Length: 316
Length: 253
View 1 (cartoon, rainbow over the protein chains, first blue to last red):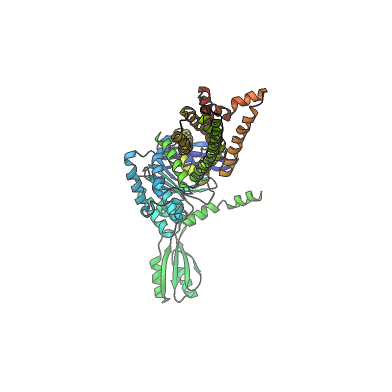
View 2 (cartoon, chains in turn cyan, red):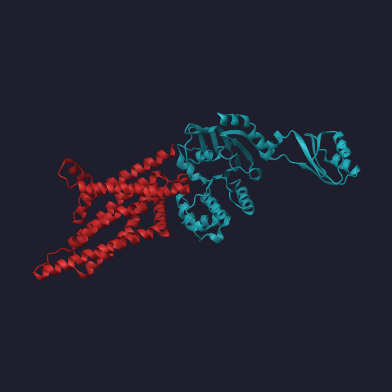
C-alpha cells in the first residue's frame, strides 16, 4: 500500500533523512518511532506530498507521491503534529469544509460528518467554535478531519500528544479499530503507544532507519537473558548463595529490602525452581515475576549505540 | 469548481465569524456616508445658488455627488484592501492549516482563486451595502443611472486588481502585519503614480498607462472602455499567477 524507496531529504545542506526505505501492507498499522528530530515528520510530509524528497521515490496506493500527487491526496487522511484547525469555525462547519475539499460526494457528506463526529466523540461540542475547545478536543477534531473521506491510508503524526491518559486510551482504541480497512502509519516518541497499537515498528534516528520489525521480535532479538524480580520478607546472604547455585542462573543481585534481581539463561524458564527454593528456605516469598524486555529497552539500546559519534560531531 | 467554492465560502464565513469583516464593512460604510453627506450638501448649496440666478436644472447629480464619492471609495481601498487580504495565506501558514490544504486534493490555482473570490465577495457585499447612498438619490431625484453603475463596475474591477496584489503579498510571509504593510506600500505606489500622470514628460505618459486610478476615473464618468476592463482583469490575473508560482516554489525549498 505504501512504499518508500531510498528517501533522502536535505534541508540547507543538513540531511534530515538518509536512504529511508520501508513498505506497509494493506490494513497494517506501522509505527514510526524515534526521538524528537529523528525525521518522522519529514517522512510523513514526503508521503503526503507536502514536501518533495531530495531523492528517492514514494508510492501510496500505487501512485507516485510526486507525479500523481492529486491521486495520492485523494486517498490519504493526514493529521499533522499540530492539529490543522481554524479557530474561528465551529466543529461542524470545519468538517463540512474539509469534506468538500476532500471531495466527499454531496449525498454522503452529512452521513460522513456524523460518522466521524461520533467516532471521535465530538457529539457534545459539534456546534462550538474550535477556538473555545480544549487541547484534547482539538486533537480529536484533527483526527476527525483525517478520517472524513474514509481514506485508504491514514498518516498520523503524534496522534496522542497533549491528551490526558483516558483520552490516550480512547484514541489508541480508535486507531486499532481502523486496522484492516485502513492502512495506518503513526509516529510517536512514546514507546508503549507504539508497542500497543502497531503491528510493526520502524525505529528511526537521525534520519536513518535503524530497525524494522514487530515489537515482539525487536524485544526478542535483543533479549540475551531472562530477568526475574523476586521480593522476599526475610532476605539473607545464604538465600542469595542458594539461588546462585540453581542451574540456569547467571547472576543474582540483592537490591534492597529483600528485592532480588535474578538473571537467567534465555532458553529456560526457572520461575518454578526459584519459587520452590525460596519456599523451602522459609524466606517468606512475597513476589516473583519475570521482567519483560520492553521496547523501551530496545529503543534506548538502538538509539544510544551511536552516542559516541554524536558527541564527536558536537565537539567539532 | 466545488473545491474553489468551498474555499470561497469558508473565507466569506470567516470574515464575518471574526471581527475583521465587521470592522472593514463599518469603516467603509461610515467613511462613505460622511463623504456622501458632504458632497450632497455641497451639491444642494450650489444648486440653490444656481437656482436663485435662474437655471441649475442642467446640474448632474451623478457627476457632482457620485463621481467624487467613487474617487474617495477608491482611496479608502488603500486602507481597507490590505486588511482584507493580509490573513488569506499568511494565517494558513501560521496555523499549519496550509499543510492540510496542500495535502488535500486541492491544486494551487484552486486555492488561490478560491481565496481571491472570497476577498472579492466581501468587497461585493460592502459595495452592495453602499448602494443605499445612491438609492437615496434615486428616491429624491432622477440621477443618470449609467455613470453610477459604471462607477460600481469600475470599483469592483479596481478592488479585484488590488485584492489580487494583497493575496500575493500574503503568500510571501507568515506574518499578517508584514503582509498588510507590504500590500499597503504597493497600493501607495500606485496611488502616487496617479500624481505623476499629470506630468507632460514621457514618464507621465507611462504612468498614465500604468495607473490604476487614472483608468478608474473613466468609469466614474460613465465610460466603460474595453481596454480598461482588460487592464484590470489582466492585472489581477498576473498578480494571482505570481502568487501561484510563489506558493509552488515554497514547496521546493
